[in-house]
Amino acid sequence: MRRIILAGFVAGFLAVPIFHQGTAFLLYHVGNDIPAVVAALGRTAPPFNMAPTRPLGVPTILSQSFWGGVWGGVLALLLTWARVRAILFSTVFGALALTAVAVSLVPWLKGLPLWKGAIPWRGLLYNGAWGFGAALMLIRPLRLRP
Image 1 (spheres, rainbow, N blue to C red):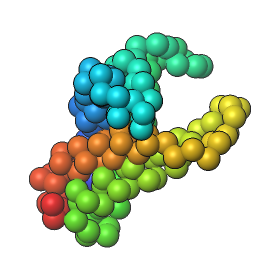
Image 2: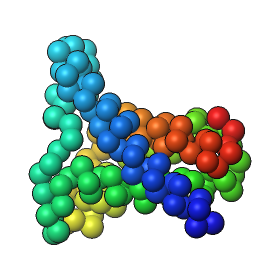
Image 3: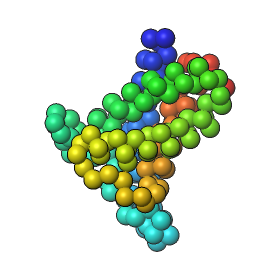
């Protein structure tokens, strides 16, 4: 069990800078120049944010990677328990579960305004990319069905 959680943590941690922020990189450098993308997702901020987070002052990308690792451990446990198609399940799990938590629980814990009802398309895209990448990194170590 410890090996599964550790593999999930590592995969989830690495999936943030590679896939989550890789998607942000593409949207920032390519998508901001395409009017239809900007109309659908809005203007994208630069990726790999190094601004300090509160209360510890850790760079945002490291905080995101840490939480990506925590979610990766959860994902690894789900994938080994459910024995589903890893890539499809992980992409949908990342898009829906992580985005739902990001628009509801996280703002509530930080004392920020809650979700106003608009569909967070960019969050669904980034978190789906995270799930896809985490699954790719977990298929071999956990002997999952792609």
